[in-house]
Length: 344
Image (cartoon, rainbow, N blue to C red; front, side, top):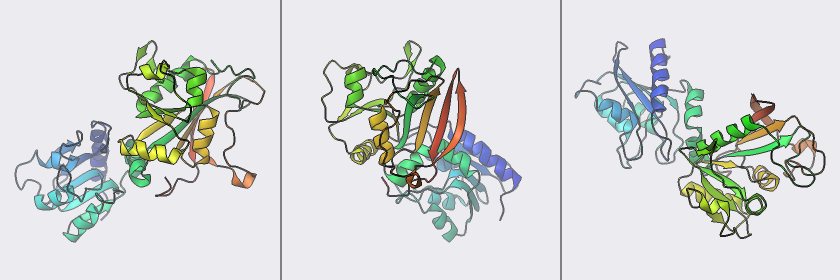
């Protein structure tokens, strides 16, 4: 049965409700329950780990049997496992819901399968409604579930001729204040910020997210990768979060460790060597290239070896947006071919 206009509007509303929930180890999910006549019976959203899932939150606002024959419109496939709460698929079945419409399949090996359980109980199920919008809301969680690692954004600033610094190594400031403010805003959206020990030793960055002279309310966890020692008086050690120090060059190992800690998004801005290593390892889910209208020349390029030996091996990108920032330009791009499950 095709999704009708009333159900589409309900999904739009469910997506709005999803964004009320906190970002965290659980996805942001919204739900709307419709009567057989299309009226909204109840709404719900997931309010954090350990709280009722969106469907159960909506059902809790109704009297017993009030959802019988109803349609549940949910932004993520109802779960099919018992954790701190019971399976949402079972809750919908027991409430007598006759139809479920959801945006995205749950990729979890344990939590997925709710749609099959619903169908087996005789519930009509439609999947894929406004999936792109739903994926934009919980993309980081989906990456963590599909690949077993955080979603990785690799950022760098460069001159128009592709240099990250002048010949003497100076790089502050290639870009203007608007671009720098945008970087700090994006840092504040990430769970962790990653640099190499070379950047710590040469630049002594604080790795905080700032709004002018003030700190953003949310600060990314600082992560330093490399075999050289981070000095006791390094600025990163005064970060609001104690830094995570990894004495290794194995990026897959680091990403697995961060995933185990519940970190779902990392912002990499550790200079050309680290940025190139993440790209070469196939770990860059998104690239942010801040391009300034300046020429520097020399050999201090924004990227070094990324494992491309010929044009046929070029790492193709799909540009999602060109964003003017004062005199600078931000290119936001993703790999033309997304990583497959298990490529972590």
